[in-house]
Image (tube, rainbow, N blue to C red; front, side, top):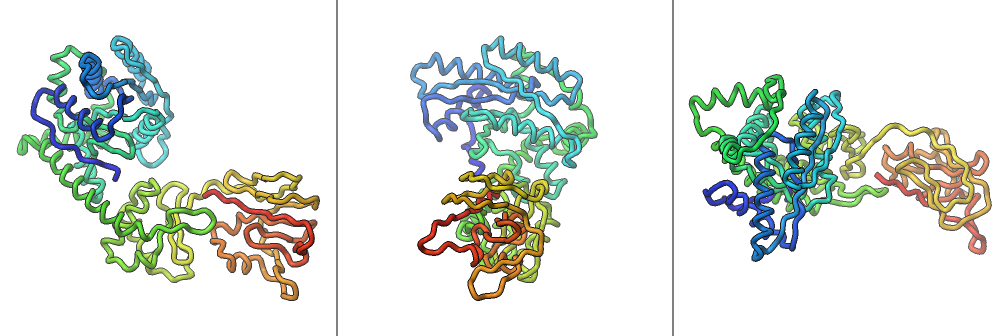
Length: 455
């Protein structure tokens, strides 16, 4: 499972609680030393966490009886969205130098035209940069108030249980740790003032045009007038929902694992729809969400999910299913199996002369492998639509469409099939067969040409 719950910490001072948190985490994955990367923005939250981690690292170095050691580094992601971004990076470099902590400043480009919004796009870029690190764990400074805000934002978006579970204290799959998730922002401010920490203030945090800032500065102050413990309460609710989500994930794995099959032409983790149809609607949806998550895709909204279930389970058997679930990614159905298909930019038609290579790269996803070489000049071309092929002596030629259907080439791959010609005659369809007029006899030298497609 992606998330893993940790036992509730003792209600002692903050640094002791962080010590207990890391002890529990490291005991779950014992090794002598751990490289922990801190996502360091220079703001209050990450400044507090940096000070705590430096303190913890020093304590463990002094305490020889400690079972493991901490090797700390930091990364500052420079988004370039604020005029002060360069000065923020400089501040982070100065602080890390004072602590003798290695810092990497990572510059990222934030595409403002993705349709996801600047906040979400910047977050994706930030996480992508952090995930490139080889560290054992990536440490984030999210706290209790952040958790409550995330839950409220997910409620406003109509998210399901997975979204409402908000952020986990430990995400094994992503290597993410959030040791401050049970701490209030007020507690972090008190810690920072006690230790005379210096941090930067991002003026964009006051801009209520951004959803999170609107929630933080407009909605929660009003809620607190009637519900003083709203942050703590909502954070606890997110934990309950995380437990529910874990149970749903376990059920989905139990239901869905037997449905995973290998599709044709290299496609893996496809879904057997006959088994999916045997489940009731709620469990079937649960499996589809889990299946999309297996492919590292974001959950579709309710409308797309409803369309997906309808098309996969109730459309005519011969209907073409083509449902977009992410940029350039569609779910398709073929012979009772659901596929996740990545469709990049349309490539130019293939028209290459084979010059004796053992491997001929045609596109980034397609190549031909020649297992036995021959001297005949061959030309490799894309399908044009009028080709015919005669695989058996004494039988009439067939249309290429008929041949590809017979050999279970999915419709979305048929235009990509590389065809082998001698002069103007189609003589070989890789992974399908050879034209009867060109078939090698038992005592003759021949060649086998294999098409490799990497989805």
